[in-house]
Amino acid sequence: MSTRQGGTSLAKGIVVAAPRSGSGKTTVTLGLLAALRQAGHVVAPAKTGPDYIDPSFLARAAGRDCVNLDPWSMAPARLKNLAAVQATGAELLLVEGVMGLFDGATDNTGSTADLAQLLDVPVLLVVDAERQSQSVAALVSGFAHWRPGLHMGGVILNRVASMRHERMLVEALAATGLPLLGAIPREAGLSLPERHLGLVLPGEIETFDTFLAAAAHAMASYVDLPRLMSMATPLAPPCAPPRPLPPLGQRMAIAKDQAFAFLYPHLLDDWRAQGAELSFFSPLQNEAPSASADAIFLPGGYPELHGPRLAAAARFKSGLIAARDRGALLYGECGGFMVLGETLVDKEGRGHAMAGLLPVTTRIDRPRRILGYRRLIQSGDLPWPGHLNGHEFHYSSARQTRLTPLFAATDAAGEAQPPMGAVIGRVMGSYAHVVDAA
Image 1 (cartoon, rainbow, N blue to C red):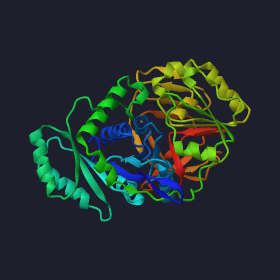
Image 2: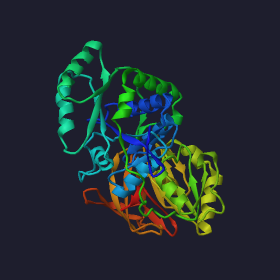
Image 3: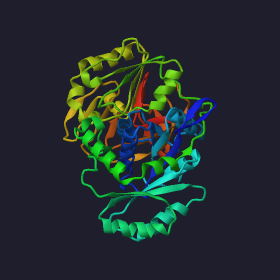
Image 4: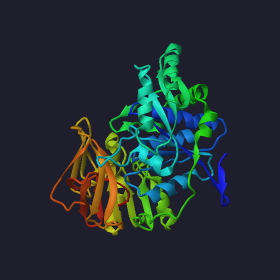
């Protein structure tokens, strides 16, 4: 059970990590969340880094909202406070890592290991055992001892081929002295479909509940869940939160549906705590933003998959124009920036008319992945500090006429990037997803 300090229920924490991407840590984390929930435990989920997709899956599995803990974009005080608030009232905070355990930004910061050490919680290492046997011991030992001060709590072996294979792995790992919490056999049903930005959203997968049940059964059958719970260590209690980003307005209308799904819960919580009234609307349902809104936020998502519906959403688009005409602030991130433009060209090369509030054409028929953290200096009228941290992750590209860019940008290593986005009056947007103040 959770410990108590000063009358506040405090959870313990574990970070689920892996030597590399593709090891199965998302499947393991989802299965653990569902299995522990079925066993009667209250588990709070979190995701390392700026990823939007995994948190939606983790929230479904846990039955609780998921937060992002981004050790590159967020200050230590922000991270510790977010983790503590997220964990309050739960027995366990289960944090899914990102990429490999020590992989971070180009400035060598922001890794899953950085977060685990900052929160002072153990790492559960998920190792893909496919195509190896005794060598697993060298791999695990190397990860366990690479960084002094990092607590490697235990190991889960994934994709084990047979009982004989498992015996070889177990015997090899015995020399490391690290606890083995489970060995999960290779099963075809333990995988999720993907698209160009990663996994699809859980609401788009008809078989997601079947997958989740299979993952929970696998974890309950092959992982020592009581030992996992006992391995966790207490988190620090909530502290005074850092100064949050101000809301874009006091009456914010926020697009939210399958085309505009990339929202950070910590920002919404910050804005509510500062007294902002948040309303939500669905452009895909041709809903207009509230007529009383003094700010409209179009977040990222997958508008390129819904070009015809957005082009036909006359009420939605006229609502944006009316908001601009009455002086409201209109701000779009990534997919939202695309929709503020004139035309969106889909992967088949078909153009779809968007809101037309920025002279920008975006297209995804010539995909080129652009990915990375960004330090941003704004030139628009956003009520935020001048220096911001964010990230960029898209396959589309934008063509625009000569406009004032919204942000000057550098990457994590400080190298200059092309100016980002566009500003016309109080209409503005860019491909950057803002995470926090710099």
